[in-house]
Amino acid sequence: MSILSCNLNTYGAFRSEAYAHLAEIGIRYVEIPCPTADEVDSVRADLEQHGLTASSVIIPCQMDADDVVIRFAHYLDGAEALGVHLAFTSAKTAELDREYVYGRLQNIGDEAAGRDVVVAMETHPDLVTNAAIGLETMQGVAHPNVRINYDTANVYYYNRDVTAEGELDLIVDYVVSVHLKDTDGGFESWHFPALGEGIVDFPACVERLNASRFTGPYTLELEGVKGEDFTANLARARVESSISYLREIGLVSA
Image (cartoon, rainbow, N blue to C red; front, side):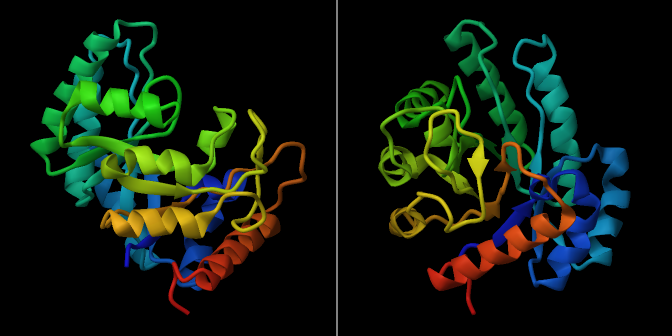
């Protein structure tokens, strides 16, 4: 069974409480901003204090920066030092020629391969806006260390007339990590409640991932609802409710 992790952004402004709460409820993995090499010891000590392990690290990718590959490699040094093998990133063409961007991603893939890291591109415009565009990007980059992080809600936010399971069908072979996020299904609707309270068919998505022998982490990313009064109690309650839901559908053992 794939591991269950949590993106710290789930806790919003109360992320300082995340480690203690996750440890309390038995979640042992987290997705965190990637430390630089000189920050690794401090980050590792903080994780170990709470019995946590980083399943993935978040690395920025400013594609139109001339030194984007060097910058990315600098963070990859931190990932390697921390012993993390999965780097999450959001990349855009930044109006650069798409073939040129593919080349930069290939260079990033080479740097990642040298450190035993796989880069997972988020389901974001304009390189993985949806399955068709994501597939085009994967085929254009054609690098085994550049893959996709599939976000079960973003496909609704950035597209119309799609389903999470339908989009997943088309790109599942390239998916190395998943952000578990629910939604009301509206186009550009910032409505991301606890898992099981929206329209995402998580059992169908898990079924497809299991069939593809997916082994990457499932990471909670609960980004809340526009206009709500977001509190620490609400953050904790959403995480706990989402884990209860995942137990119900068999993704998390009882």
